[in-house]
Length: 102
View (cartoon, rainbow, N blue to C red):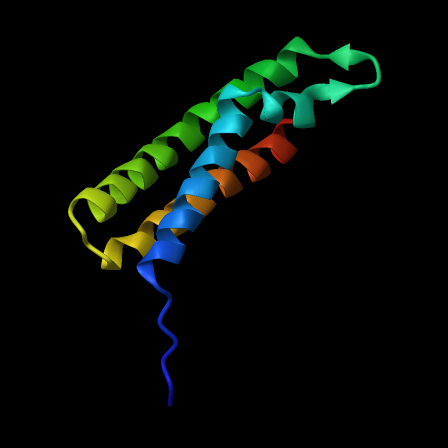
Protein backbone atom coordinates (compact mmCIF):
# COMPACT_ATOMS: atom_id res chain seq x y z
CA UNK A 1 0.00 0.00 0.00
CA UNK A 2 1.42 3.38 -0.97
CA UNK A 3 0.84 6.53 0.96
CA UNK A 4 0.46 9.84 -0.81
CA UNK A 5 2.04 12.75 1.01
CA UNK A 6 0.94 16.27 0.20
CA UNK A 7 3.74 18.81 0.63
CA UNK A 8 3.09 21.33 3.41
CA UNK A 9 3.60 24.21 0.97
CA UNK A 10 0.55 23.12 -1.01
CA UNK A 11 -1.53 22.81 2.15
CA UNK A 12 -0.35 26.24 3.32
CA UNK A 13 -1.30 27.77 -0.04
CA UNK A 14 -4.69 26.04 0.07
CA UNK A 15 -5.27 27.37 3.58
CA UNK A 16 -4.41 30.89 2.45
CA UNK A 17 -6.72 30.69 -0.56
CA UNK A 18 -9.61 29.29 1.46
CA UNK A 19 -9.11 32.00 4.11
CA UNK A 20 -9.19 34.64 1.37
CA UNK A 21 -12.38 33.19 -0.09
CA UNK A 22 -13.98 33.10 3.36
CA UNK A 23 -12.90 36.70 4.01
CA UNK A 24 -14.48 37.93 0.80
CA UNK A 25 -17.67 36.00 1.56
CA UNK A 26 -17.95 37.50 5.05
CA UNK A 27 -16.33 40.92 4.89
CA UNK A 28 -16.82 41.59 1.19
CA UNK A 29 -20.56 41.02 1.36
CA UNK A 30 -20.55 38.08 -1.03
CA UNK A 31 -22.72 35.99 1.27
CA UNK A 32 -25.43 38.64 1.59
CA UNK A 33 -25.38 39.23 -2.14
CA UNK A 34 -25.52 35.53 -2.94
CA UNK A 35 -28.28 34.51 -0.55
CA UNK A 36 -30.37 37.63 0.09
CA UNK A 37 -30.56 39.41 -3.24
CA UNK A 38 -33.69 38.74 -5.23
CA UNK A 39 -35.13 40.43 -8.27
CA UNK A 40 -36.94 42.89 -6.01
CA UNK A 41 -33.98 43.77 -3.79
CA UNK A 42 -32.69 42.60 -0.45
CA UNK A 43 -34.96 41.65 2.43
CA UNK A 44 -34.01 42.83 5.94
CA UNK A 45 -35.08 39.52 7.48
CA UNK A 46 -32.68 37.59 5.28
CA UNK A 47 -29.84 39.95 6.18
CA UNK A 48 -30.50 39.31 9.87
CA UNK A 49 -30.49 35.54 9.34
CA UNK A 50 -27.27 35.74 7.32
CA UNK A 51 -25.69 37.78 10.12
CA UNK A 52 -26.31 34.95 12.57
CA UNK A 53 -24.91 32.43 10.10
CA UNK A 54 -21.83 34.62 9.67
CA UNK A 55 -21.38 34.73 13.45
CA UNK A 56 -21.38 30.93 13.58
CA UNK A 57 -18.95 30.76 10.66
CA UNK A 58 -16.65 33.25 12.41
CA UNK A 59 -16.37 30.88 15.36
CA UNK A 60 -15.24 28.06 13.09
CA UNK A 61 -12.93 30.44 11.21
CA UNK A 62 -11.24 31.42 14.48
CA UNK A 63 -10.30 27.77 15.01
CA UNK A 64 -9.06 27.64 11.41
CA UNK A 65 -7.03 30.83 11.82
CA UNK A 66 -5.44 29.54 15.02
CA UNK A 67 -4.58 26.22 13.39
CA UNK A 68 -3.13 28.05 10.39
CA UNK A 69 -1.05 30.34 12.59
CA UNK A 70 0.30 27.52 14.73
CA UNK A 71 1.06 25.45 11.62
CA UNK A 72 2.98 28.31 10.01
CA UNK A 73 4.71 29.85 13.00
CA UNK A 74 5.26 26.66 14.95
CA UNK A 75 6.35 24.73 11.86
CA UNK A 76 3.93 21.94 12.69
CA UNK A 77 3.31 20.28 9.36
CA UNK A 78 0.64 18.02 10.81
CA UNK A 79 -1.62 21.02 11.51
CA UNK A 80 -1.72 22.21 7.90
CA UNK A 81 -4.31 19.57 7.04
CA UNK A 82 -6.36 20.48 10.12
CA UNK A 83 -6.26 24.14 9.11
CA UNK A 84 -7.44 23.39 5.56
CA UNK A 85 -10.28 21.22 6.84
CA UNK A 86 -11.31 23.92 9.33
CA UNK A 87 -11.47 26.53 6.55
CA UNK A 88 -13.58 24.15 4.47
CA UNK A 89 -15.93 23.66 7.43
CA UNK A 90 -16.18 27.45 7.92
CA UNK A 91 -17.13 27.87 4.27
CA UNK A 92 -19.57 24.95 4.47
CA UNK A 93 -21.27 26.52 7.50
CA UNK A 94 -21.59 29.75 5.54
CA UNK A 95 -22.99 27.99 2.48
CA UNK A 96 -25.44 25.67 4.23
CA UNK A 97 -26.53 28.43 6.61
CA UNK A 98 -27.01 30.78 3.67
CA UNK A 99 -29.22 28.26 1.92
CA UNK A 100 -31.24 27.83 5.09
CA UNK A 101 -31.51 31.62 5.54
CA UNK A 102 -33.11 32.06 2.14
